[in-house]
Image (cartoon, rainbow, N blue to C red; front, side, top):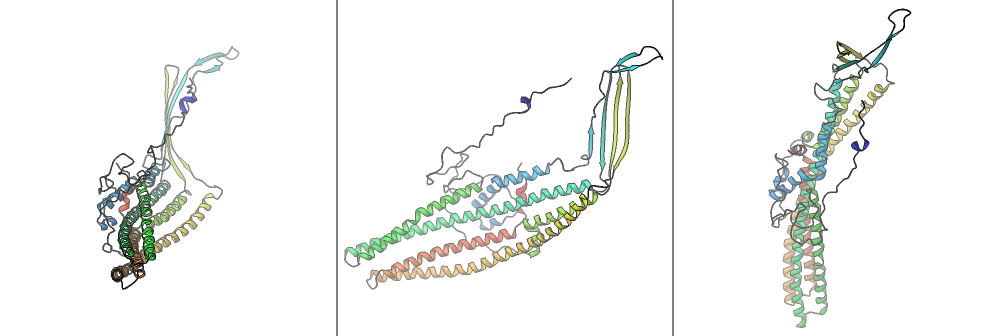
Length: 479
């Protein structure tokens, strides 16, 4: 009897439903806060009330900002790239071609059976008419084989597969550490732009006050019209910078929401309104350069790549030795309705590959060259890791010195502006020194703000260069 299954029952049409999208693009980013899932963040609340992705000590706790911690935790759990590579780890762990467990070399099956209703023709007596005998025969067998891993061939295959899985895990740790750095850098960029907006709006108010003063003096014939035009031009120039800064804040918020796995949203709701650019926290413990072999994911990945080739060499060596399998079979044979017999056997099969066209010899030579290259890459990874720490330390030290100088110049610039304005109001000087002092102070304040931002950036780069083992927790699938 043959079972016929229509093709339409096995093949079904594929229809992929697109993910939900908002009804319209967000244009008025000054509107109230909203999220892609419909929830609304309260002003000043920390984003990401989901379960923490890390429980061990993390470097961003040095900034003592629960909102920043919540944002990074949300990104580590919900970022689409992290979710993809984290799932890929467990997808590779379930590869059916990887020998895992004692039962993997065991193969059990039912072979093809002898067909029934076989007609046999025999001759009972010489010279007589042959007699046709028809009977029904049926049989069922169960066979099993088990490969003994005496030379470690299957174990080497498993170790190679485990190395590849762990390499994927280290790649995920690298991605998660980079993601934490990106979120913190965007966080500080938003704070910088907010402060810059406040500075610019303060400059607008100050220049408006000066413009009103100059206009009043012009009406009293104490100031020429040229000064009025110069101040009006200065006022319009500064005022035109405010919408550009607002647009940059909106773009940064869109980038930050995308990193957190949300729908990109330009509304300024993630970073609480009361946050300001923090001062540099205390310096982290550097440890010894050799510690980077364990604390940086790049070094752990390079070491796994060396281990993978070592295990491939063991797999190649074990393939030169014979394969030993234990075989067994048991079954029942029935003739008609009354005659039934049992059958079975057990034995050992040894397979020794003697010639394969020099494939294994070629593979062994290739693995030696690959191992040499990956050892060089391991050494290069260590030197690169040490260089990143040294560069971050050097940049931070020099940037801190530059920031102190800029802040001192800004204090002096305010004094110069006050003195220039006093002399102008008293009629002892023209307006040019005021205009020069005003532009110089604005430049110094912006330079000081950017210097502080660079100092924080170098500290974040130092944290990233030192690595850590906290990122291992991110590679685990949530329950």
